[in-house]
Image 1 (cartoon, rainbow, N blue to C red):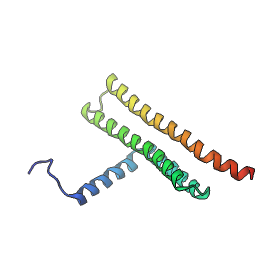
Image 2 (cartoon, helix red, strand yellow):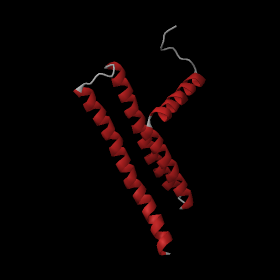
Image 3 (tube, rainbow, N blue to C red):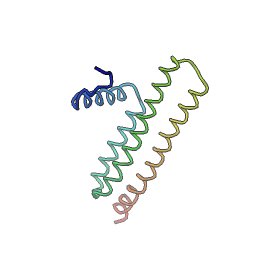
Image 4 (tube, rainbow, N blue to C red):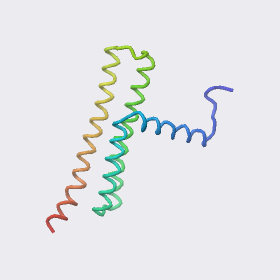
Length: 126
């Protein structure tokens, strides 16, 4: 049997959950992004977001979390390949991956400002 043979959906799902668990246990920024995402969703409930606003918010949150997971994959892969030895190219690749997360988070903050500012101003002014 090939090491690439299909093991079934249940096993694939279990492996995916193991990966998310590993990210939660080992990546502080992943936990921070999850917390901020959860709090943002709660704020959407308090501010009575419409369905489309929730969709945009969920896409923004998932974009940041996905970028963070890919950043972790890149870091783990490069560390394993280079056996944790310093390399300027590895540093550059890790910095670029971190830049992707930063750009994704910044974009999500702008989206959050657009979604939340309007709702909060309506509450405060009326």
